[in-house]
Image 1 (cartoon, rainbow over the protein chains, first blue to last red):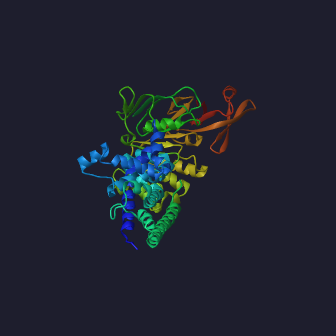
Image 2 (image 1 turned 90 degrees about the vertical axis):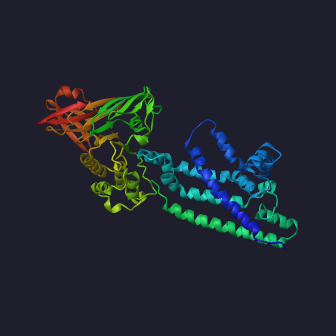
Image 3 (image 1 turned 120 degrees about the vertical axis):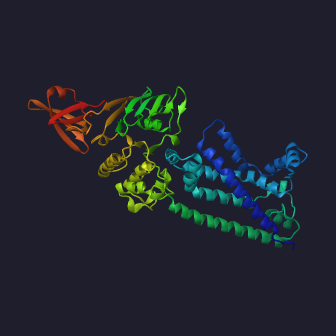
Length: 226
Length: 287
């Protein structure tokens, strides 16, 4: 048997980093989509949703091509930033950010759109800036949506397989995440390891969802309808 | 002094011509803008607040230009230093009563002023409650004192009492008058409810078919021995050699005797102002 905890830890690390980064990136994108009307908004929304419907291998394939040091973008990153995204953990993070983008944006956007529009106007009328309004009024009133976005992103990244396989490969300690480790174990007929990885993933996913639903219920119960 | 002279085509109005408003409001005045729904009352308030851009014209408040389409001045709402009471209140659900006030206050350290607001509206005991746990009247009070917390030069109110029952609305109208008397902010109240026009107000503006008619001070200045009521004519009928006009004021029906000539000009559903001066009764049409 070839079991160790490294792939599980790597998976959790990747999910955590992706979730935190996507939350930071997601808030401005979601508020832009929620509050602005402009030409071509549908195009932007379609691009954000694309990872939902694309096979992960398509995304992985293009990322692989883009990151490759033989091509312009990859060469540029390599020579100016000394950064190789193919078969590296940073590449996985970037891939996951794109792959899980809709899972963060959609809940945030829906939450912001569901807020009464004059909540924002009331804050502005009190002399508050857009930034202060966002952090003190809007975001605190969409806590359930933020939580949903974070959990979906985390869980979705945890279960990522196709993209990782394409751009990450199977490097112990840097790109061999749990889902890859399962595949690898099955291929070498090590069913025992596959069982352990799988069971741990099921338990982690279930506990995360359980906590989320419990928390969300509490948040919703306290939610105010004016 | 507030000078407003603006024009705006509003696609949602019932009328084809644009909303035209020319107003002059003195500092500290209590002004009611009256009109049926759909004539553009809320749009007018939103333009004064800076939430809606007029097509053309000028808004000037205390010698400061808030809007001028000619030299493209359009002060953002944050810089207009006003208080806005929204029809839907827009209280912040995540904050308690006190937190709503502290967020709104320019100078959160000046707690004595906030305490005074809480005292006048009898909200002192509710300071740590969230808006959702307050009654309709308490939420309305909070919306008003939150708008006053930053000591605005103008207070704008959009149909502030429309969701309350008559008794409670009357009580809140009285409280608003007390706040106005004590704190002396200029007040612009928009309403379609005749009850908002009764009592002491400095100016009545009727919005009608996209135009604003300014009725300045007609029997509304409290200094002289006169007072006035506003109501809707129900019917007109002959009585002996005179006529009786039945007018619905608030929830009462008043029977006002008048001469045949005046009676001729009165028709059901007209809005009229009844003015009492030294024992005389004057009827005047609104709009």
